[in-house]
Structures are given as C-alpha cells and as structure tokens.
Amino acid sequence: MDIKLTNSAIRRFLKTEISPEEFAEKISLCGPTFDRLYKKGGDYVFEIEAITNRVDTACAYGVAREGNAILNQMGIPTELVGNPYEQQINAHESLPKIFNIKISDPGLAPRFTAVSLKNVKIGKSDKDVSTLLELCGERPINNAVDITNELTMLYGCPLHIFDLDKIEKKHLILRESKSGETITLLDGSKNKLSGGDIIIEDGGGKLIDLCGVMGGKKAEVDENTKNILLIVPMYHPRKIRKTSLFLQKRTIASQIYEKQPDIEL
Image 1 (cartoon, rainbow, N blue to C red):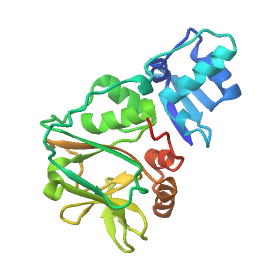
Image 2 (cartoon, one colour):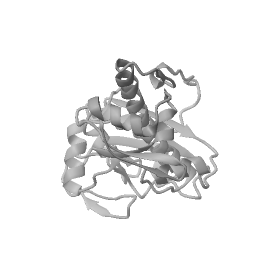
Image 3 (cartoon, rainbow, N blue to C red):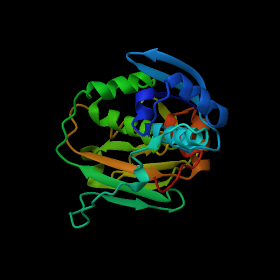
Image 4 (cartoon, rainbow, N blue to C red):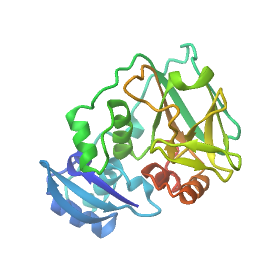
C-alpha cells in the first residue's frame, strides 16, 4: 500500500532532532520503506510503501510510533506524543436520538460508531488542512469532508459523513447487497452490485453508502448541508476487498479496511 505523508504530520506525534532525510533512511532499514523524499511548499513529502501486514503504519501516527521504536533502538532520542489510545472523550448518552441504525449481521461491522453534528457551516478548509491534503495527493473539497480525510491520514481510521437531512426517515440499515442492486457513488459512477457487498440503505430503501469503499451520491455533503451524520466503522475485511476489486474502486479506505485495522482505534 503506497501512501504520501508530510514530515510535519509525522512530527505532530514524534519529537526528534534528526533530519527528514536521516529519518527516512533509518526507518527504511527496519520498517516501512520510504521510496522517495522531496521538499514542497515549505514541507517535506515522504512517499511510503506501508508493510502489507502492518496497516497501522499507513498513517502519520503509525509511522511516528514505528519511528519511535526503531530510533530508540539505535540510541537516537525520541518522544512519542499525542497517543490516540490514551485520549478520552465524554459522550452524552442522555441526549435524544435523532436517527436510528440497524445492523442486520454484526459480523459485517464489528464496530460501528455514529454521531450527529447539527447546525454546521460548510465552507473552505483552513489553509493548513488544505495544504496537507494537497501535499498528500488529496483534493480539498470542503471543511467537513476534508477533516475526515485529514483524520484518516493522521490516524489510519477511515471516517465517512452523510448529509443527515438527505437520509429518509433518519433511518439506516446496514446489510449485504442483493445481486443487481445499483448505487451512484460520490465520483458520479453508477455501479451494479454482484451481491454480498456491505451497504447502507436509508428509510426510503435508497442505497447511500458502499461501505468501506466510497459513499453514495444521494446523501452527499455539499455547500447546503446543515446537519451531518458522522460514522466511524470497522468492516469485514474480505468483503471490502471483494467489492473494491470487483468494481475497481481502490480507495485509501478500502485498502485500509481490507487489511483489518485495529478495532480499538
């Protein structure tokens, strides 16, 4: 799996005095391979080949954690900061539910977290976010979409957002697709499914997500969006791989999910 990461993104989590060039050279000896390093826009960009069975190294925190272990073994002082496994959040379980989710088979999504965000304002991202995305080969879209892509780059945990007001009856069903069902994806392509794909349909029976691969056009977040549904799921890895290969949709999310990332992140 090939990814691009900036030096500044990795240094959010790893404190060390060595240069980007030396960092790339030393980590390549024992961990993910740094195929290329170049300077652009006041930052350094690493082109990295993440280890196939180490999908945790396909993000800035994962590379920083790997670098921390390797450099310490070489006697180079480092400090790992911002560990997401140590961070706590406060959930308000007493708030009224404004949407409902049904998962037909827990094996399809062993973890599924969702939260609604109300009265959002859609616009351009801050310059630091859009610059990071561009340096890493992603096209900035809007502040809501961009933050999900940024978090995927930083933590290796794909997220997806829907326009909550476009979800009919505020009801979602996660299930396997039936042969012949179709979905129009965010890239504008209309896709006929072979069956057995993980999908989400809304209360009107419309498919709104090809899970783990790409979102559907029907519930796309755009400049008119006011309320958002954010999901942080984990999916059955082999099903995601089958779908992405069959439809030739090799997204970053699909490549992460098919390698079964840590369910606790």
